Each structure stands twice: as C-alpha cells, then as structure tokens.
Amino acid sequence: SGSAISTGSFGSVHVPDKIGIGTTSPSVAFEVNDSTGIKLVNPTNLTVGLTPTNNGLQIYTLESKHIQFWTGNTFAMEISENQNVGIGTIDPAYRLDVRKAGETIIQAKATNTGRAKLHLDAHTDIAEIYFALGGSNKGAIYQESDGTKLNVYGFTGSSYGYEIMTWNYSD
Image 1 (cartoon, rainbow, N blue to C red):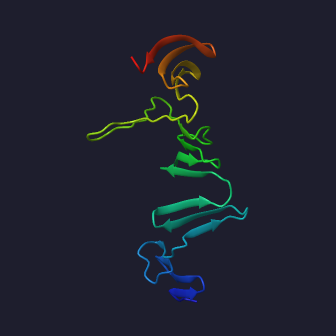
Image 2 (cartoon, one colour; image 1 turned 45 degrees about the vertical axis):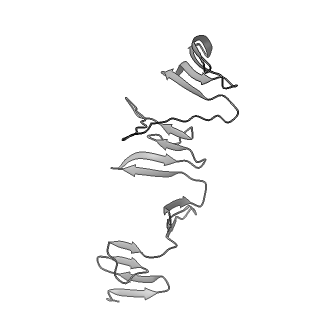
Image 3 (spheres, helix red, strand yellow; image 1 turned 90 degrees about the vertical axis):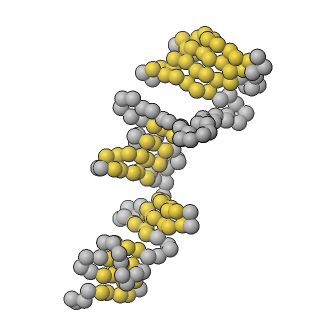
C-alpha cells in the first residue's frame, strides 16, 4: 500500500494522475498500449470494444446491439444491430436514415473540378427517387426496367397518377 506503481499480470498502473496499461509512462489520464484494444463487459454480458487496426479503429459489440454516438450530451448517430445507419434518429428504418427537425440537406459537393454524383443501381430492378410531403408520396423519378426511358410521375393517392414527362435516351 502507498505505492505509486502497481504491476501484475494486467500490466502497469500508475497513480495518482495517470493510468497506463502496457506502458510505464502514460501520456494521458488513461492510456492502453496494446494491439488487442479495450473490451468492456457489463453484468448483463454486453461486450463492447475498441481495437486499433492497420486501417484505423474498430468499434464493436459482440452481441447484436446498437452503437450510438453522442455529442454535447445529445444523440447524434446510431448504427443498428441490422447495420442500418441513422443520423439524427434512433432505431433507423433504412440502410441510411437521416432525420432532422426543420430543413434537412444532404449534400454531395465537388470542391474542385469534377462532378458530384448520386449513383442509384437497382441491380436488375428499377432505380427510383420518391418525393413526399408530410409522409405522403407526391412524385417520383424512375428509370424504365429496360433502361430506355427516364420517367417523372405525380401521385394520386397511393398510386402513380399521371405521367409528367418521359425522356427517351435515344432522343
């Protein structure tokens, strides 16, 4: 007791102002110098971890659970157990689900020469963009299944109501 340094099978611990595991000279309040990372386990057997890799940082759960990111004590983003990503929404419903009260802008911007692109590839189906107001579909842009036309449609009720424009690629 009274020792500033304790050692054992767990590595080294330095007190009173810094703790180091795998290092005898921690440079911050808590430093782990080990390639296997940090694993936290709570009493209900939820395991989360941080592991440094050659490509950066791996953040993980060993169980199928959400990973949430908070900033300024406010929820910011979540990766759900089914790998959906929600920005501004808990329990995202889509692969990328972005929500915000008020104006919401999702931007793809080329900051120098080049193009900003949005690429929709429906594999063997139709690629579509829907426009909604208050949760109700109001219009859509979609490509014909044979790839020959781009159509702009308005909605009446829950189905396509009227064709506004069709553009043939051959025109």
